[in-house]
Amino acid sequence: MSKHERWNALLELLAADGRVDVEDAAVTLEVSPATIRRDLDELAAQQMLVRTRGGAIAHGVSYELPLRYKSSRHASEKQRIASAVAELIGEGEVVGLNGGTTTTEVARALALRASGTRRDAPDANAPVLTVVTNALNIAGELAVRPQIKIVVTGGVARPQTYELVGPLTVGVLNEVVLDVAVLGVDGIDPELGVMTHQEDEASISRLFAERAQRVILVTDSSKMGKRAFARICGLDSIDVVVTDSSVPPDVAEGLAEAGIKVVAV
Image (cartoon, rainbow, N blue to C red; front, side, top):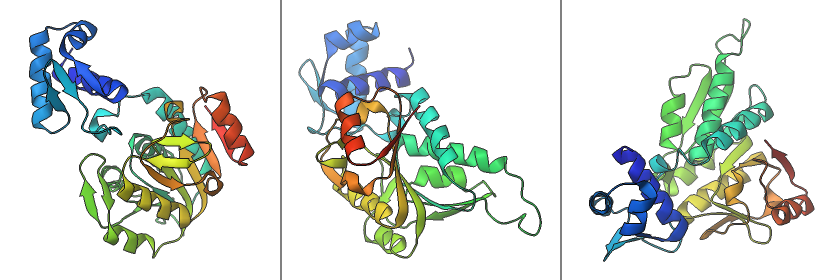
């Protein structure tokens, strides 16, 4: 197991339990306790956890893994979700994408579909899609795709998620109109609605939803029935949820009662 794989596994344990014990982690990852101690020391130096005697704890109650360490979580589910979302987007539409691993997969699926679209003159040079995003990594991937017009908001970059937030981001979003907003989230609760870990990201995602004619939520089932710190919007603002087939029954019932179409892949 490489160092990156160990770090990813340790952060997964931290996200799940809120703490990591050196001896337990050594057994789980099949490495020596000394290796785990070195890994935790290095992660602490990057301010990704807090070292304790015998292990480490998360920075806060609502722990957020940096995006680069979340990409392998539920990867196959996210790719299926992304493919299903791409089928819901019409040619020529203006699509808003917030940041996250699932919306990054959606961007890749849209790019793949756009690259396979043949355009006839005189519209051969017209973009197949317009994508508005506040995510730097998504913008970087789509900027090299000539079939997609990419609009990037301004703002202050959050290193954990590569998302731009703040008044500059709001200023740009207030000047655009979206056909559809595709939002990744950290929690969906039948009563409280849709949530994320950070309040500044929540306000930007809320604005994406307000500027769109329809809103598609993309999330794997691990987020269903979970709560996070900052509320984005209520379920009444959501039109479609695209997820995997392991949605908890009570959440599925709540979505149905709210009149939301659920696409399970």
